[in-house]
Length: 151
Image 1 (cartoon, rainbow, N blue to C red):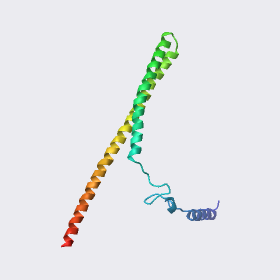
Image 2: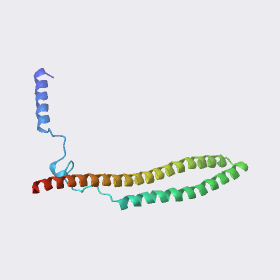
Image 3: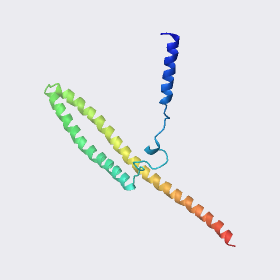
Image 4: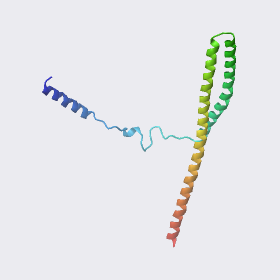
């Protein structure tokens, strides 16, 4: 390839690149940043949070109880199989031990969800109270300015 040919190819590539340049941003009609998007704003009510928290609490209580029945039955079956000389007994015992680990992981997650939602509810209530108090103070201050102009 000759030098002139190389320069021509570089020039053509640069022209194509500049013709296709696009800013890295969202199209104006697509929504995003500050305005209303096509999908609306994310909203969640206290009722929604309470429902999710309650479901997590119910799962925690029910699954904890029922999984224990499964663990006890599996370990009893594993012991019976092992005592009869079946290798499957050891494998079932291993599965039952892993089951305990997995159940604990699920129960911890349910408790975390429930506790976090309870904390979130309480924190939002505290934030609302603080904001209401702040706005009330501003309104009281405004009344003082209004009172001064009346005289």
